[in-house]
Length: 316
Image (cartoon, rainbow, N blue to C red; front, side, top):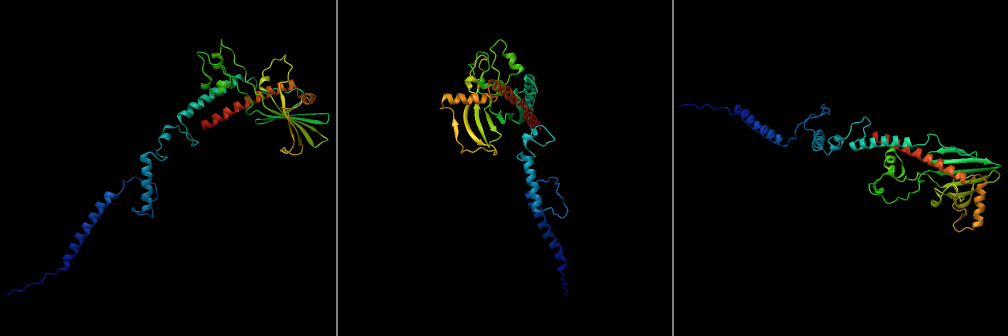
């Protein structure tokens, strides 16, 4: 009979295994293509990192989502609408218009500035300035008289009249419209009643120190609103004493425990003697008028500096 030759099975195994492996690889590729995010160029170093590293892929996708959605700093629509600047700060079209307005405002304020030099004080007063603070010193006959004031909040509110037809209401006017005169506003006011000049009337403190004593007699003075702008022929006092107290000379900070005399209910005879005491030391109506001129000039000077600093801040 015939002899059957056995066929070896082992040579067929590699082919079957290859087909199985091929199906596994194909399935893995299809699953990976569905789940993989869109590829974008990455600026991260690739050395030592595999393509499937979770950290790199998560960071790359987060950056891609921020850029594409416009929610992050790289996709911020406000910065795209802003103006480029080397300082790295945000600059918008509104900032540009603001800066142009400030440039015009500074020019107008300098036009109406009476002088770049501060007015002098008669009577031998030494004037010292530290920003918005001013100090006047005078020494006479064994005494030292010091007057100090601050120009902040020193402009009293004006009594606005009802706006006439064709005039702009006060509620729509800014700081310059209420307090500052400009060439433009001057032209608008031609033929109309001129607005009163804005003056600075600060509260001021007078310290009278006897060089042989360790105490100072301190007067807290102010300008009453009904006395501001009085006629020159009026002999009434344009400033008033609010409080009087003794304070130690060597200490910078005054003690709240020192008795303070309020003049609201003071006897008029005693009040008149206190006013005469100040007048004998050069604190009279002439001094008060000159102090108003000095304070007004300092206030206007500081206002212009503020506008210039504000302009520099807005620009960069």
